[in-house]
Length: 349
Image 1 (cartoon, rainbow, N blue to C red):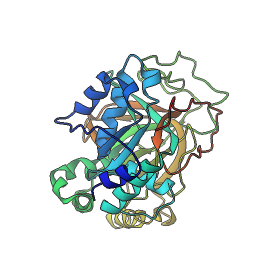
Image 2: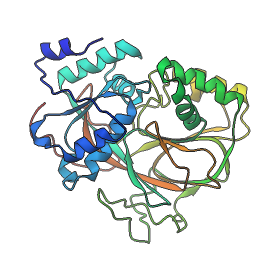
Image 3: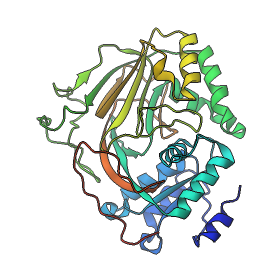
Image 4: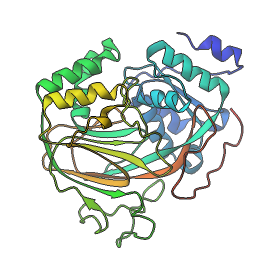
């Protein structure tokens, strides 16, 4: 499906730029004169949106740059963000050209919604942002190890799931989180981490223990850990059927070691329709959180951040509410547990 006829009919003019290598999009948005454009439209998988968001946050004028509206048109094998936006618009769950058509129609309608942003810090000093997810364990393995099958499109994830089930791995580490509702009156005693970007009020240095009002998971053997800001992991993986996150909230899922391959397969098959939380699996836990810390016991495996590889090391993160605009299906703002006022774009798309 070529989106250009729909865009032309809606009087959407654009300049097409083809990226040539990894981080090209990040470099482009770091240097671009953003006032020339009404929006930045990314037609690719989730990784390119990741580059664009981090490029905007690295700019000296990040406070205004991050408010340039973004749009996701699915063009890769991993299109979780586009699938989530499709769901928020009230469309049926679709894939491939149907998903591209729906997302193009959203762009033509020019409606915007504010989105949460996850700020993360690692033990090696890396600071990065995510607009979608962080995963360790089974989901990260499927995502990263199926890269070699990209030519198969979304089928790569199905194939990767069966391969990773056959060689199911256990990952050790300490997981802690700050649940929703534990944050308004309890701030950390240590000064918050400072950096270019919004202040991470609830995070303290990784070499310090988490504050006492955080929850420390008593288990240290996991099949997977997933932090998710949206509803979908892919167009056919409805991971968070509880719906769109409130402003300043993200989903934390984890599956403890001990789950059988058969049960794990059942969960992922049910996830296609968002029914996995109905499987009554005692190993699967979901918690709405505002911050987390994950400290692997070793460097086995890797993290997947918005579908991109990140070295396995201690990492912590905090979600920031309504940090940027995206083309979406409505102007409705998600319910917020903190009152946040964010400026609208200076001019319409």
